[in-house]
Image (cartoon, rainbow, N blue to C red; front, side, top):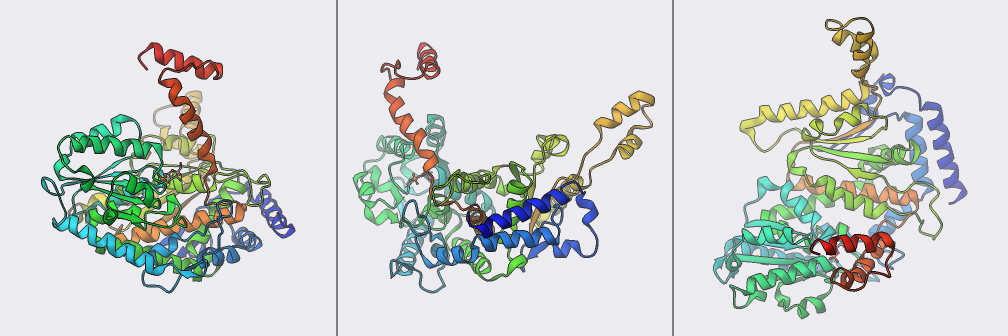
Length: 538
Ligand code: F6P
């Protein structure tokens, strides 16, 4: 860590010590709501309900400067190999730079290839949607995307998010190697009218390849040329050929697109087939607009920067280990799962770029569920539990069901009520007043105590007009850049994922053992579990 960065962290910690005990509510004077929010024409990020004041924000901006955020951002967009442990550029932004200028990697402009691939995807998606590409039994009725992690979560999340725009064939997403996952999808599909898309950057991921072979076997029972109803999305075109997929239906991409950042390119094909090329372009445009905003907006006007700085404040400075993502937008049901990979696979690392142990905590645990469902499940702990959980709410002005707008209004009221309740709480006097007509004496005190809400719990809210394809693009790119900024400040490489390797290696080694080989070389716990499961039918 440079002395400047160390100084910036120390200054923030000192500031936090000074302000940790105050109540957020007391900060509301003057135009705090405007001063502590970042806004574009369509998006408003309100972080007024946090314990940040002007000094805190300034110290966070100093931290970003000390971490050379501007330099790292320029390096990313310029195609420099900022994924240093893998020696790769990080250019998922190029996939949405469709109307923009050249983007060079090793001196070569990659935009020609990006546009060509997009045009091929669009032509293929159109042919599936208009019925000119058929299965052996006629027009495609179902698309099965087989992929996992970034090759599943992006298109699955996006297809659900854009359900109101879905006018193509039904889309199914199979990810888990658990046979239950693929079996229940195959059960409802007709092999003669199904397109299978095998989505895997490496085309080696064991879950995906196992499911792909199962799908091929299923199809070959009823279809004479099953491979003709397969497409592949991958960087490994030799392997897609070995699987028997015609290069005409292989959509490749470069290694500078990370798996969890890949839904903007070929990995988004199922989403494009679902909503159509036009809507998919709007999604790309939304992402590109956020890229421009991220590069141009200054200081507190910059949404990804401010979202990241609030994240750093809560996690690394205040010590809150998790953050809840709570979309009051049911079509964003899969957003928390999508963000779990995006944020935790990117910033869940204990070693800094230069190989030293991280001197601060890595990124937070990210979790969540849509509101209002979560309110009737886990919000109890958020309101009255002993740990503070910063909440991130998402809410739209309008849904897509105008005839039920009164329900949407109720949804919005709930969202705003939650952030207000978290901040304001309810003190003992107010709690007593609530039950004074029913209890008295010691029992009144006891009952009132249970009804106290400590309050002073921080939240941010992202508000937007409506979840359109363009808006989804803005929101996803916003989160991507937030992860980038947090990674730069932590000094880590947000674009590798070595932490997933060990489990994969051990699973490969364990496979023969679960199939019957001797388990005695394993630790007692593992061997004991194998024994227990074998005795019961493994
Ligand atoms: O194992 C983790 C991971 O590599 C993710 O980063 C990736 O999104 C996922 O597996 C799937 O990888 P692939 O697209 O190569 O099948």
